Image 1: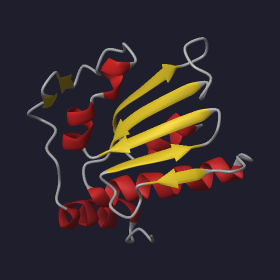
Image 2: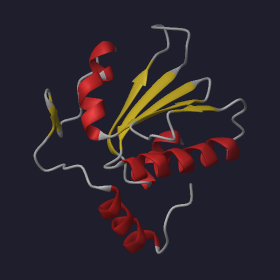
Image 3: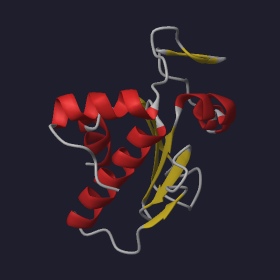
Image 4: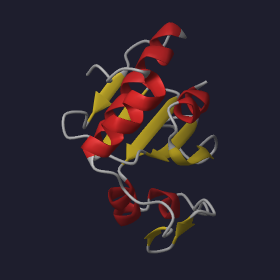
Amino acid sequence: MAKASLDDGKAEGIVVIPLIGKTSIADYMIIASGRSGRQVAALTQNLAEKLKEAGAKGLTIEGLPRADWVLVDAKDIIVHIFRPEVRSFYNLEKMWGVELPPDLLVGGYSVDSESLTDEEAEEDWDEEAGESPKF
């Protein structure tokens, strides 16, 4: 359900990492990117709503005001949502021994996947959703 929420919000480079047997902090970690801070915030807001609807209790969200890197802790699932350049810098996938998605290079995102300004992202949102996101 969490991955589907990110897919619906057009997150990029979604990676699901099973943590069972590796750590007791969670069962799964999901890492994804938004093209701008505005999209990262919108993805986080939509994900939090879906998790609450599914009955998640004690949901913790960190990093939302700046929206460069947002952590959503839903106890059994931990979700990291990054802007592309921040994700490339921290490269959490490497820490867990997981391959980067094919559209990502070792040094960051492929040439085809550019970061949008907040204004460009808002225009995309307006065209697709018919309204601006509410934060």
